[in-house]
Image 1 (tube, helix red, strand yellow):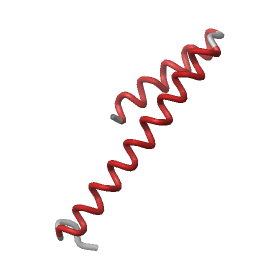
Image 2 (spheres, helix red, strand yellow; image 1 turned 180 degrees about the vertical axis):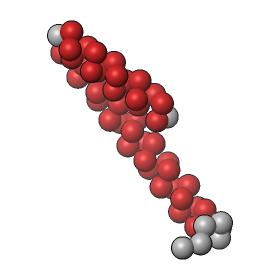
Image 3 (spheres, one colour; image 1 turned 60 degrees about the vertical axis):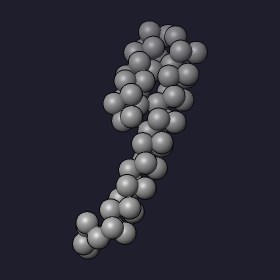
Length: 57
């Protein structure tokens, strides 16, 4: 998921540099959504690991 967020981020940077503002804005929106979904899933797995006793702080 993080890989796709980075791909869309690069697409938005390239499109913005070339002047395609609509494509750049759409790609950056998709990249933001994918990044936040990745963070939520990552936090869920960390909480599950802590509750299972795999990670000790």
